[in-house]
Amino acid sequence: MEKKVLYINACARSESRTDRIARALLERLGGLQEEVKLAEMDLQPLSEEADYTDAMFDLARQFQQADEIVIAAPYWDLSFPAILKLYLENIYVTGLVSEYTETGRSHGLCLAGKLWYVTTAGGSYLSDFSCQYLHTLAAEYFGIPETELICAEMLDVEGFDADNLVAQQIGQIQKRKLL
Ligand SMILES: Cc1cc2nc3c(=O)[nH]c(=O)nc-3n(C[C@H](O)[C@H](O)[C@H](O)COP(=O)(O)O)c2cc1C
Image 1: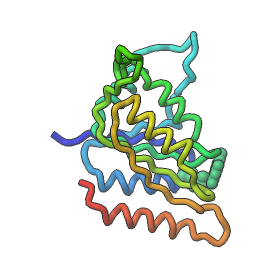
Image 2: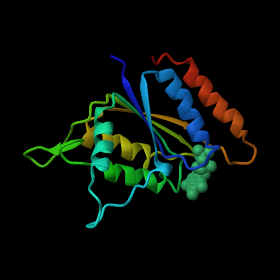
Image 3: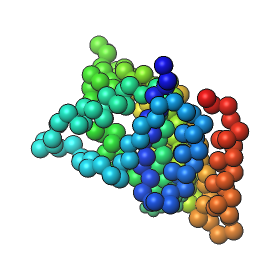
């Protein structure tokens, strides 16, 4: 059976360089691909009045059942766009993506073996509050053991050729044996 690859697209711009790199990766990964384009969804913060409809559970189930997950998000304010946090809040359904053990620890229920985190940064990239956070969340709460970062940085710094830096990253992806 073909592997299911879930693409979580948290890019905001139509000319997004992060999205461009992620699509090169998706091409290498193959499989049956589904894209969740966060900008086009009506994600709401959870609240007492939140509408806990089937749609939210569908998103959680889709995340839980993916064999491989690609998240693309630009580097914003040392982290990633808030819409990605909204998505995570919405898919975090206890009993679907995670459950508690008797000792209170979380035990992940997701099937994916790997999460790819694709990002681009205007300056130099510090992974602490984006990729590192997602790696810990994936491993400890979702049960996804491996996270790999793909990053192109310095894209908005004078003297650096952004197109070339993005092309280099895409070239490296195209050379990898991923299928
Ligand atoms: C709201 C916002 C916040 C940003 N914050 C940072 C930042 O903290 N550090 C940094 O190096 N670049 C920052 N940037 C620059 C982006 O990371 C950079 O332009 C990135 O390549 C954008 O990705 P995109 O081409 O996929 O949209 C920020 C850009 C925006 C619009």
